[in-house]
Amino acid sequence: MNAPELTMRFGKVLRSRGVAGTLVAAGRHLFRPRPKTLATWKELVTERRGFEIGGPSPMFGRGGTLPIYPLIAGLDNCNFSARTVWEGAISEGLKFQYDPDRSPGRQYIAEATDLSMIQSSTYDFALSCHSLEHTANPLRALTEWKRILKDGGALLLVVPHKEDSFDHRRPVTKLEHLVDDFKKGTTEDDVTHQSEVLKLHDIDRDWGCSDWKSFEERTRKNSENRCMHQHVFDTSLVAHMLDYLQMQLLSVEALRPFHIIIASRKLPASEHPNNESLLSANAEWRRASPFRIDRERAGNGQ
Image (tube, rainbow, N blue to C red):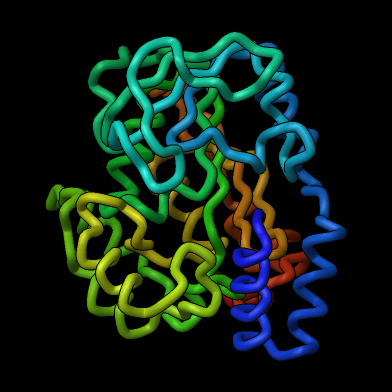
């Protein structure tokens, strides 16, 4: 990161959080917490073959918060376009370089909601870091990610928590709304949430935009760039989405600065998950969460 970018980021944090908040943010950057559920994630991916939606993700790389790339036997990938804001130009083929010591995986250009080029029950795990929020129909996306998993395969998600992110002014999306999107087949050009984003987005917490004019232009062209967060999540919502899709929850964790970290497993069609302990109002992750929203709901359910 060059000096002008550092100066811009510092100014944004200072405006948004004040001096005290800036010092706290700097401390979190320098002393990043390790997820308590890291051991679970490592066990689910070590020497196994997986599929990542979006990425490659620094969070999964060597030195990242969840450094699992070095453990993986093989990893394929999809991105929605041959050119993205995050990766630049990409092309299909054996070109997905996720770790310097691993052979590249196969790169696909495909929507996260339509992986029809991949046969069902192909992979040991599916992986996604800060991608689901860019999807207009997240339950449809998750259904596809589940489909390509073998029975017993793991779905590993990192999703942004609204608290402390640039979504903090927006309301958490209701599960009923996501179910409605799923049932009516909402497509990726949907603009339902565009006006809400333009009204409530906190640009001072968005490193990707330097001014409001460019942010507004970017948001109105979301069908091309997919930068907009279509939906807003807290930890409970993500857990209930996976439960709705009959995934067995393995671990749930909330982590600073704004991460929801959840591992789940695909069960055989004849089995049904029992997620009561992790969906309970008394679940340990609720009390341990660094986010006020999660803690306030402890004892009160979703």
